[in-house]
Image 1 (tube, rainbow, N blue to C red):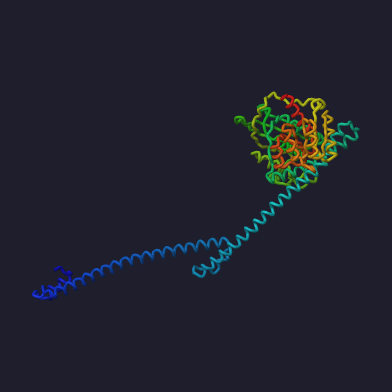
Image 2: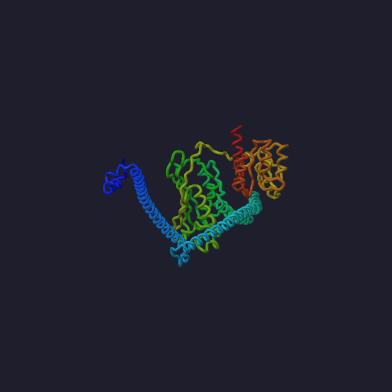
Amino acid sequence: MSYNKILKKQIARYLPKEYQDAKDLTQFLESVSDNYDSFDRDKKIIENAFVVSEKEFNDVVENLKSQNELRLKSISELKDAISAIDASALDGITDSDHDILNIITFLKEQIRKTKELEKHLTEAKNIAEKTARAKSDFLSTMSHEIRTPLNAIIGYIHLLKQENPMPSQVEYLDILQISSKNLLSLVNDILDFNKIEENKIVFASSDIEIRKLLNEIKMANKIMADERGNTIKIMVDEDIPKYLVGDTTRLAQVFNNLVSNAIKFTTNGRITVELQLKAQDGNNSVIDFSISDTGIGINEESQKHIFHRFTQAHKYITREYGGTGLGLAIIQKLLKLMGSEINVKSKIGEGSTFYFTLTLPKSTLQEDAEIDMGSETLLLDGVRILLVEDITYNAILARKMLTNWNAQVTIADNGLKAVEKAKTEEFDIILMDVQMPIMDGITATKEIRKFNPDISIFPLTAAVDAEIQAEFVELGAKEFILKPINPDALRKTLLKWYNSRVIKN
């Protein structure tokens, strides 16, 4: 019989041999052996259980230690964050559970304040957007209301000067012309700056004969230059292509502003406009532009501020020379939108040089291409024009200009009448005012396009914003005629159309 080893030892030591095989005693010993075995098993289980429990206990201790370190680190970072928000909020805060609750309470309050601030900022943003829209609408309306009478003033001065006025009247007409153009320049500066601020500037793309454009700028400023005893010199690198592509109106605005500024601050001196070809990059010409004068100059300190809006180089300039202080700010922003930057070099008493670099694509026009401007009385001879204008004196003025060029003019004083006349009569061109009662210019143009998709329609307006321009472009308009109407610009636009039609036919 096999007994538990401890029981075996005890039997051998204490139980006489003659009793070891006794049947009744054997059954007892087996039972005792089973109890011994059961005890040994329980002992091993308990020992193993203690070992496992000790390991789990150590793991729990390590975990608690790690969590405590993480807690302390989190509290430290929370304190740093709170200190950045409000250093005084940490006064009296330790690492106790109660102070942790204070930290949480503080953070909840900060979240509440942040949400409240976001709400106020959203409301302020909405108010600012409404204000910006109201300002834009106001300026657009004022643009139309101011430019409309200016159109009549400038236009009738032009007509009077063509009717052989008396010598004593010529001087008065010149003064009126200069004053009205100065007023128009001020209005344009304010409106253009507003467009730039609201990112509503849209650049056109057309063929530019750069030398011709500069000569036109020179002629436009010749009277003012002569009055101040100045000469204007244009110098263009022969390697610059004759025809380039860009926004003629905006380039003319930049040149005209810089040239007129140079004339304004120069007496008995010289204004030089110089263009140098910096590089030819494939089809693109990289051109250095500079406009120099021998005028009063700008000190170094003022050079840092002259491109800021409503800023003049000297306090007395606005009083002595006039101007809004917006011209250079507008030029800087326009050139930036064109991918360039304007700079200035100047010394007091020695003059100033404004310079910048532009990259302009070469036009597909041939070098020998010319737009034949012809005589004023022949090239518009017989052209049938529908003039849509609701302001009577502006309509009379425009008709006078057009009939002077032998055009046949019919007037409609609102869009609805224009649609009716376009249905029943034949026209070559429609000059379409934009803002009119009964039916505006865009609606009238859409209606006319339904039954006459090919007729040339030129928007005639005192205020063109990006949205209106985009709508007219979709309706097939390629050029805009701005009020106050510049007679030369109007004639050039119409002659370009006329010559293109002649070439096509």
